[in-house]
Length: 180
Length: 99
Image (cartoon, rainbow over all chains, first blue to last red; front, side, top):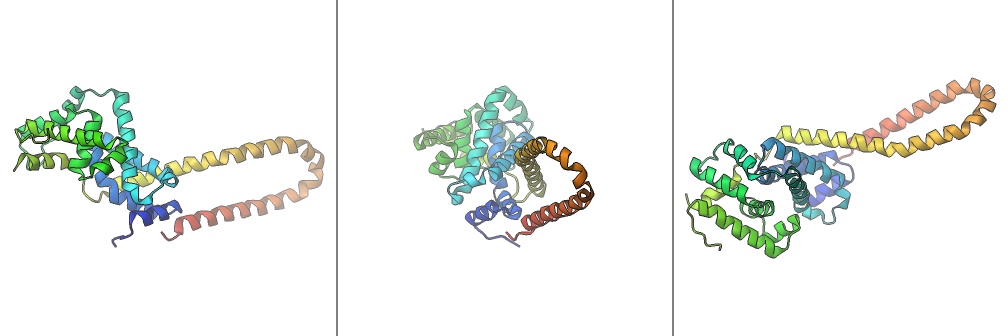
């Protein structure tokens, strides 16, 4: 049976102790969360998935602190971003290590192997905030404002990160660099 | 395929399917573990209070011990059953509450 309750209703139910409601929130948001963390972390997918689980557990624990229940998705992604950023900084992960893994990940369908490799290199060359902005806005189709809220960055910074990141990624494909 | 399409396909490659029971189960398991530890931590102050009470009550119990001894078994059994019943009822209410 499909649960058509909104995030707001599910958050309210989860706050009052319903594990089923929280499970529904996990089910609804896990794909986007992991789709964001996997390329962001630049490590193994297992590490990104572990981080996604950690972010969800923290979200469960701090559900009472969420001010606007309708903003659950943004809030959750913010938790995940802070955890990911802190882990990236603490492990001082270099782009060399990123590339070693990214190159062994396999080629996404519909993308030429050489293009995938070039994009891997370009993506790992972006700073973590740039990568996060690109992933949220170009891959997850978030608005700049939503991304700014989740990442706790000024709107202008998000716009410039997305624009610059997209241009750098497209430049390795020989595409139009119309974003400046 | 335009460069934009290629970029989109590349960025979407890490996104898993809309349902992943293994992942969801792992999250539920971690939540249960976190809840367990939180409940243990919440009990800590009560354990400390009980310990302090025992320390202060010890001299009184030593004096009244012989008089209370015949009642100790019944009081202990009734108390134990009451605590167990309340704990089970609380757990069931929490688990079976409709979401």
